[in-house]
Amino acid sequence: MNILIIEDEKRNYNRLKHLLEEIDAAFHIEGPLASIAESVEWLQTHPAPDLILADIRLSDGLSFDALRQTAVSSPVIFTTAYDEYAIQAFKFNSFDYLLKPVKGDELASAIDKVRRQYLTATGGEELRQLLEYMRRNNYRYRERFLLPYRDGYVSVQVKDISHIALVEHNTQLYMNNGTVETVRYSLDELEKQLNPDEFFRANRQFLIRIDSILSVNNWFNSKLKVHLKKYPDAEIIVSRERAAALKEWLDR
Image (tube, rainbow, N blue to C red; front, side, top):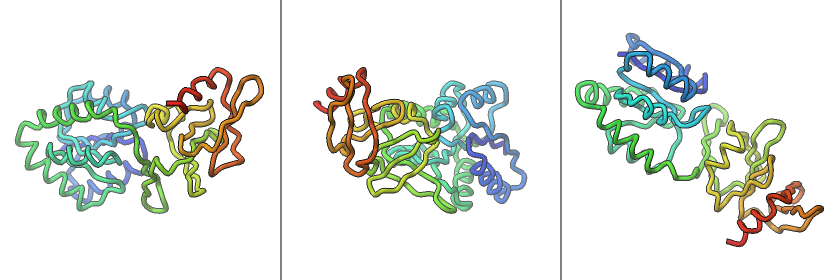
């Protein structure tokens, strides 16, 4: 059985590879492919694998874009954090979804399902249904982040974020409880992923959440200064060019 792994984190790839080798030493494992561009190129120049293990969020976007671009017919098991409703849809379409860190018994069960249902049937139609579902629901804004924590992961809710800042080339979530979490997304990426009714791009350094704002004051040269409830020492200055947009955003 030829298995392709699409995953942009080396440690996650190593874990999947180890689990697969434990399940069946005869598996032929390809990858990892860490981006949409790399995945598209591989899928266009190689025979279709028997199975694809794909992280949804890659360094340059979402992996189902690569699958849709190449019209791949291979069954797919997704191994990432995503929306609960999508999870239900995946299972309805007989595909599987495994939360990280992936457990060996869950992976073995998912592969057994693939063997029984897709290698002997027309799995391509189910894949097309799944990709179409994901395309239709791609408008859903991010609701949580799955972050590494000790030897596992912890889920952080978007509603618990005060603001997001770029600090020394690191994107950091400033939580309402006073903790700070680092994520691997840029502010430009997060600006697209987060609900624009709740988050405003104040400048190159800050994304602010509407419920975290204490007050807004006039500043020099027609700029505005934003004061936050939980972080009164934060220096968030909105440029003259962005000031009108902030006022409009707050006055909806």
